[in-house]
Image (cartoon, rainbow, N blue to C red; front, top):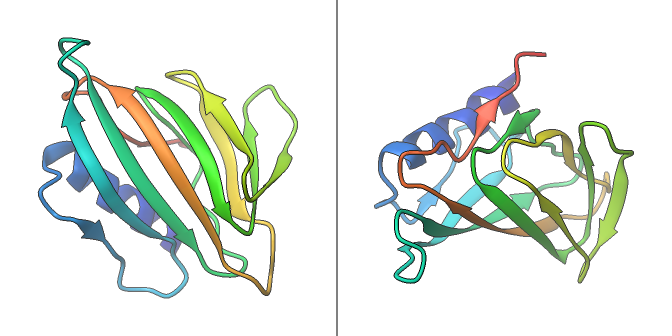
Length: 138
């Protein structure tokens, strides 16, 4: 449940304002989320691009969630296990990536290692009023 509070809080704050360069939580059990860029798109009126870095300590995971915007994720280091509803869980290694259409339910996002850190770069396209993350109820 600590992960739920951690991951939901920064993204809820992010939907209101992204002026803070990084979000951190008060517990070591939660991943670190850093907003690298938040930019309105001139060639796509009404949309913005958001770039986020997610740092997982060994064994850490995110809560089950969905995004209103389209998400693309790239593993910078380590290995990440990811599962979108209706698909099997896949372990992605550094240099590998995946795509999540808007509204996809991301059931699993976690560090595959109990001993090594992992880092994920997430690029999203969404409307400014769309939520970056919506926690799933179950």
